[in-house]
Image (tube, rainbow, N blue to C red):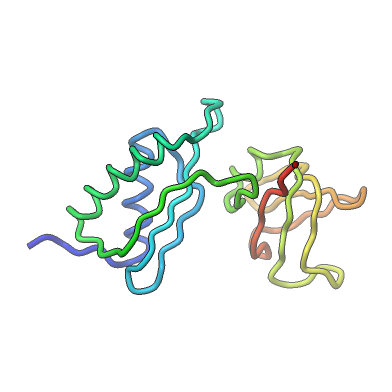
Length: 154
C-alpha cells in the first residue's frame, strides 16, 4: 500500500525537492484546507538571470502531478506560477536578493506605533532586514515580520 502524504511540511518538502530537481526554487507555497488547492510560486535561482515562462510552469505541473499521485497527496487543483511583480519576501535570501528594491513590510507587533512600513531594502542578515523608510534606517527582526512583499515599479 502506498503511503499517503497529508502533512503540510511533508507536502512542502516533496514540492521543493521536485522543483529543485528541475532547476527552480520555490518562492511561496499555499496549501488549501482539506486537500483543496496547491498553489506554488517558482523562480529560477538568481545567478541564472532567467525569468519563469509558461513552459517552465507546464513542465513543473506535469512533473508534480506524477509525483503527487505516486506519493498519495490528495488535492483538488494544482497551480504553478511565477512570483509576480509583488513577490513575497520570506527568507533572508529573498531580502538579500532584492537589496535596493522597495518593499512593504507588515509587522506582527507595532514599532513606534506602526505596523506597516514601505521602504528600500538596504541589507539583510540571518536575524533581520534593514529597511530605509523616509531617510531613516530601521532594523526589523524576522520574528516580527508578518508579511513582506516587493512594491512593483510601474
